[in-house]
Amino acid sequence: MNNKNIKNIIYNDELYSSIFDLNNISEGLDFLTNDESFIQVGTWKYEKGKILDAHYHNTFERKSFITQEVVLVLEGSIICNLYTKDGNFIATEEINQNQLIIQYQGIHEYEIMKDSKILEIKNGPYFGPDKDRTRVNIRND
Image (tube, rainbow, N blue to C red; front, side):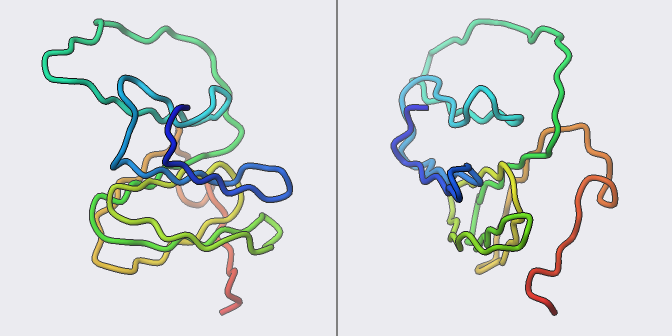
């Protein structure tokens, strides 16, 4: 994790989210997440002509106990409001074009600030919206 363009959101000594600016990524292969994260996110930056070794991934039993997600803003701008599972407010973060946020735990709420194109990536398998997530009325509407 050599990326200097990182902002970690920590609450009570626990990592809730990380925000990365992809405009200045490190040379070579650089993983943005820790090896222990259920979701693994890395960047590549190589010059033309580089050939990466052909490979496949070995089969191992892996257990995930939580869904973690990556939201990458391709165009536009969003706001991410972060809370603990108990509803305690942690932070409001603006995520702009070429930035991504990784959600490790807690409640997250997104507001679209400009017309946006977003790429969302999660660990799986996905069990559908009713089983895989719990909607929370954080605003008490």
